[in-house]
Image (cartoon, rainbow, N blue to C red; front, side):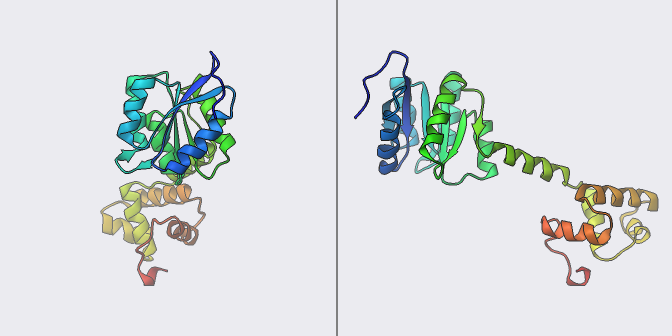
Length: 221
């Protein structure tokens, strides 16, 4: 049962291809006196159509659906309105999904395993700050991305790393890559710095742990 609408209540459209989730989350939304569920949809195409019909303040959409993704919904609706709040729900809340939602123009990202209070909180945020992205895991995801970018090697540095893994010294690596020994040593120093290593052994262990040397030869282990 829905609460009697208030003049200042936030209207919500819920898009999910699972009927149980639509019914369950819809009931939770309707229990909030400041939120009002005005429509539901079971697919991307239906969700976009319903948005155009009812013009809600906030859209909460599942990420994976049979005829597309919640990101398709977000991109389409963000082009049509910069004022609508757009929340993405998903069972798979990895870093890639978080950044994809943010780049698509979402206002928030919530895992389906999160408490329903998190969805309500995200909806309220999206209603007042549709362009400010919120996600409980955003800080951690950004730290991991920053760490990954800081350890990314250039193509030349990766070539040098592979030869380090073969046991070659700076002079031999330089000869193979047609580099001076001093240039080769500079590459090695940058590799150590990026990997947080003090020596070759530490660099190789770190490189294998993060997948930079996934195809290392047995002799180099």
